[in-house]
Amino acid sequence: MAVLLITHDLNLVRHFAQRVAVMEKGVLVESGPVETLFASPQHPYTQRLLQSRPERAVVPVLPIAPVLLDARDVCVDFRTKLPGMAGWFQSGRFRAVDDATVSVRQGETLGIVGESGSGKSTLAMALLGLQRTSHGVIDFQGRALRSYRGREQTTLRSNMQVVFQDPFSSLSPRQTIERIVGEGLALHRPQLNADARRDKVIGVLREVGIDRTALHRYPHEFSGGQRQRIAIARALVLEPRILILDEPTSALDVSIQQQVLKLLAGLQRKYNLGFVFISHDLAVIGAMAHRVAVMQNGAIVETGEVERIFAEPTHPYTRKLLKAALTT
Image (cartoon, rainbow, N blue to C red; front, side):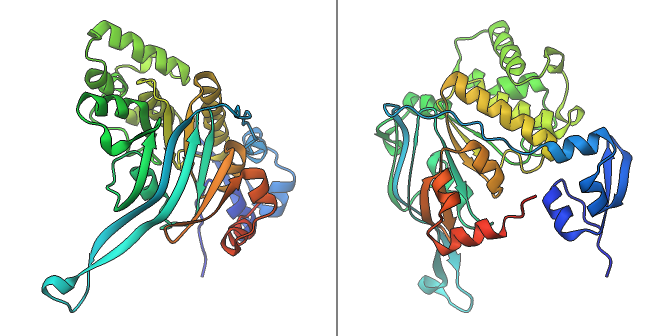
């Protein structure tokens, strides 16, 4: 059987393909045997792709940095239907997150890794207060999420923002960039008039590298990397304290991925943001995170400083993940 493997993951290509073709802007710019192309790339774009590896860009967190988010013994359960059962007996329970304990300090990045279905995104939604928990406590700045009510909850939402994985589906195709980025301001900053909102949108777009000419354009007019920058701007415009980043670079090729990671690192340093960075890419976590939590079947099986976990993993599942990571 012949296989056509289409991917932006160069590690997969190196390990599983015999020949490779490199495309840029719809044009096939270089092709040949994998060994030859990886050893001696001829086209500048191929050279840039091969040189684009995540570089560690973390700044040490001050020991006195306050804890922004603190989750203890968090469980998330979903009801399921049991086949062949009826009445009260037809409902079962699936535990998606099992006694998870994590914390994030100001200016710190917590990486969460694990295979698909391990509970990473469910935990993230629970940390945001968007997923009901069945057990445990989640505090934001020393106060339980469940205690926020009314206007306080609106303030909480502006302080905790999320950037999703897919920039092609997380932005409404029917809205202009100005409306997408400024939508939250209408709810969370009602005192701003239209001109003030536009100025704020222009300013935050500039911070992520998007020109003001984008205001009246639509998402389909931008590349994947540009869309993700717009998604970051949408989260940043409310001046949050913490960002939940759910696989924010997995849909991007390695050269664009590196640019977005540098952007995020710069924003974190500038605004002293806390990040929860979810990824299955250990190289990205190694470049961005101060600490890492490893999830398996809903449970955190190992957690600690990134350098220690990557150098001396103690749990068999962590060792398995690191061994399975295909590195160039």
